[in-house]
Image 1 (cartoon, rainbow, N blue to C red):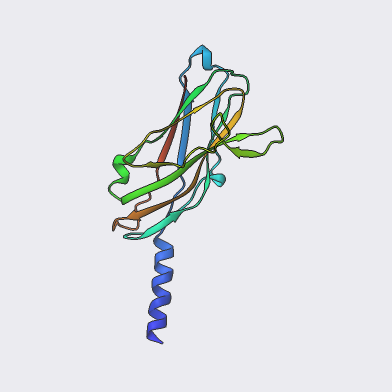
Image 2 (cartoon, rainbow, N blue to C red):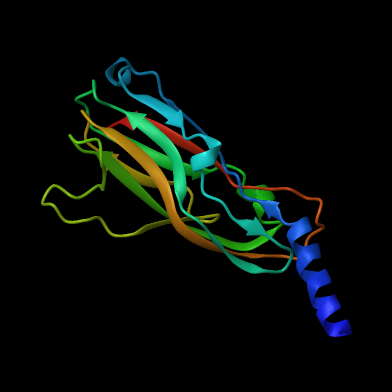
Length: 176
C-alpha cells in the first residue's frame, strides 16, 4: 500500500512541476520592395508544437505550426531562414533538442501539401537543433506556405521546477 501511495505521489508531483513548451514565434521580411508582397505571420498558440519538460528526462515534442507565409502576390523566389534565437538560454536546461522542420504549400483546394523539388520529389527531412540554427528553405513565390515542427525529442538536465523555458523561433524571409 505504501508503494502505491508513493507512486501516485510521484506522478502527481511530476505533473505539477512540468513546464509546457509553447514556442514563441515571430518573423519578418527584410523590407525590400521586391518582397513587399510577402507576409509572415506567427501561428496562434493553440496550433503551436508542445512538450512537457521535466528535470532530467527524455521526452517528445508534438507537432504544430510555427509560421504562415503569404507570397501569393510575389513572383520572386525567396529564402526562408528559421532560427532558434535563445539557444544560449536553452543549454542551461537541455542536453539536446532536435526538431523535425517541414514546409507545406497550400494547393488550389486549400489543402496543405509537403513541398517538393521541381521534379516532384519530396525533400529530405530537415532538422533544427540548438547547434545548427538556422535551417534554410528556398521557395518559389505565388503561393501560401506554413512552417511546422513535425516531431522532435529532447533530453533535459536537472533544473528547478519553477523555471519555465521554451525555444524562441524567428523566421527571416529574403529574396533569392
